[in-house]
Length: 518
Image 1 (spheres, helix red, strand yellow):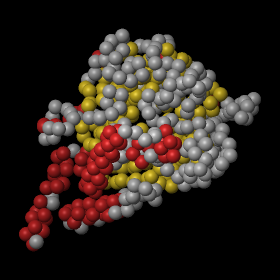
Image 2: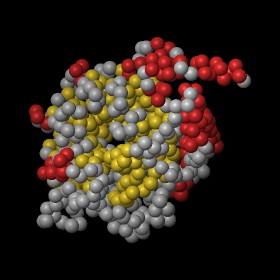
Image 3: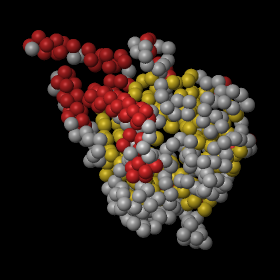
């Protein structure tokens, strides 16, 4: 739409040639600063690379020719002794007709696509030789298999294309329906939310002149563009969205999904194929696709709604954050007005929110003030100023995404424009462990520094404990492109301390004997 103010988050990717064209020669001072910044990034990245065999049990790096604004784990398709096979939803964007996009052919301007790919991580089976030999073999194999073949410009052999959907507009957000793994929702730069049955959608070839794929459902209700705020309900087939019209919109797609969507007795496993589970109205236009109107429209924000989240225990309760710095809690059972409105939850725009799946009292927010705040809904009051449980300060740029860990109630992650993905544990705040690293922010549990530019999205894997997929937009550092990484930190870091110490103690005698022989 002409005359619109660009996104405040600076998440729009630019191809290298366009970036170079828009940045004419500047003064030596600015060039010097940029060079210093690049040197600093390279230095930190080199330091991180040297520690990978020690810090990670699994790491796959996949270069993207174009950036991705969203990544999301899909259903697990196969689980075996030596590997898991799982679907991964990924958006990848292109803006130039002369550009080759990832695995695919040349594409036309402004075509953005939703990719569905496989993740096949290798699980190491370490036989019980001696305890020390087992440990050393595990470390050696991790180093050799995952690191000796590491290449920032290469595409991981563990990530393979499954299907391409030519999306009508860029893919800003991808969310999957918990009640059926075949259904995903996407946000683009329009007022509509698009619903896709990824099994029945035809696999498209992104060639020049190719037409857009047709969504299975179109959710209408926003009056202006809705770009980033999107959520699927964990308990009911409800969809939630927020946009530039300052509103939060709720839909139910229950009536448009057949019984096979939520009936465990149907006998169909995720990805088994078959007919579409989306009911179609014969009177709908073939070009536009069937549309669904909103169940409710909720007004209370004074600026763009940047993110939304459902309560883990009720489809009628949800929350939202926006560029007005407000955190708002809603209850559809009592009307369309805010139940609780925290006027100044943080000191700048709020970019992300997540409601704890373990404890419905805790809510996270991420802000442009470089911090993450945790709120307890029991202490919030209407028209009040934010009173957080704790403020987590460890990023040096705007926080873009926050998400609770599904494997431990006190752990969550945050990614930011500083290129870092921080893992926090609020139970560690104030404990002796913080004193062991005086320079570390309180509660910081682990820091993933594998990306060299802003980490725009990440997602915890519910099928593979402590495994994360993350994507970065590398335009500032490389002039274009992005990076997809799938990683899992060493289990020595998150297992109970007593268990780890007991295991390491078993190596003591063997290590002493080996040292004496040498």
